[in-house]
Image (tube, rainbow, N blue to C red):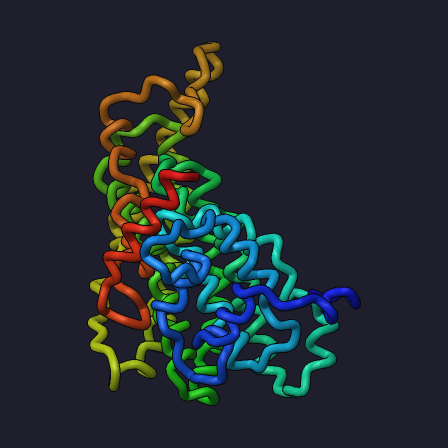
Length: 342
């Protein structure tokens, strides 16, 4: 849409329909039914066959305006967030999201009429967060065990959000409207899901650390300080829900703590383990298999990792809509039909 030829291109029916949705209009709210229509390619005729979902995603990004207002930018990004979190189609949507250059081009910000650096900074932060979520393919995490790479991605994603807690707070204060509140809910949903995954690994480690293989012990033990830091920062992030107390009821989670005595016992056990491990290596015994490569885990290891997946995470767009509470069963059936045809 940035080329000269695009200026003379006839708009498609998809583009015209998209312009008439709450995604691109000036309304401060976003209607989730419009997001579902996007996924169906605006096929409202129950007798017709919806277009392939990938084509809908491709048309969505190609139909976006080049210079939207700040509010419309937020609604576009919130739309991307909901679709990215969709349990059924999120991974396909991620492929198109990470190719989209819409708000990444810094030259666009120079040309925009809005001169508020806070707004520009927030848009860039939110876009980059979604791009990282797309690159991490967050919807596929439930297919993997707790690996070093996955845990590292979890910590990095949490830190990106926590580093911008004050920015989010400032934007909520200065832009007191529905879409900013919905974005906070969307971000919180991902933050708490990632944190709970991390917490589950640590809590099971605190119980079973003496039963684990040496390399598994040291892998998880090295994450304890990261967990303590994340627990402190997520409590600070939770204070942002003060902006929502008039609309939503939030109960603060019972944050888990690692007692000083238990922490010291674990470190002492680790020191002993290092000594024993060194002795074993000197005796030229077979090296321990890595966490990712071990094809025959011990019964204790198998139990430890049996539930450390993202299967329990319920995504907003397929369970509790962030903008509406009424489910649309008919559209879900059509989406299932699309999946079978693709």
